[in-house]
Image 1: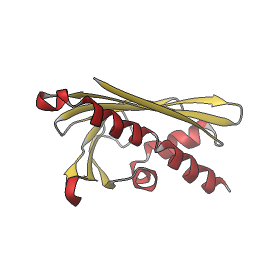
Image 2: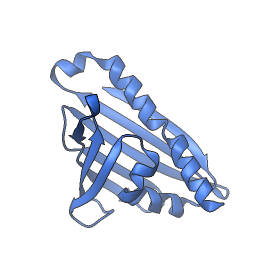
Image 3: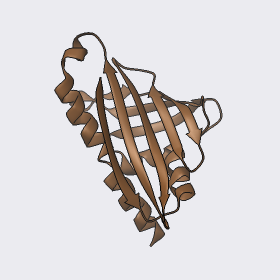
Length: 146
């Protein structure tokens, strides 16, 4: 299993950060490679909601990155699970209030299958780069506040 996590402190209240993260239309503004995301079924932003996501893949191809929200606790946590692909990705955003700011931790776990299970290092590097995109989220949210 490959695991990566990263955290930042954002000068916004927890509910503002939570609402921004829960609105999947915001994902392309801070996560590189996401082309589009749309609700496929369920109530948007709630546990069980299924989303169809297209992401940039190898060689410029577009690949499917569908996911389901598995946990949504307002102002505190959003967890999701990938539904497509050779890897079984589970991720989450965990929020805590620190004064007038919010600490956001982005954590990812992958359970590669088959031959991919032997290639742990590339997964870890890619996952670390993905969770470090929280710096972009911080920039987007703090600039919006100005």
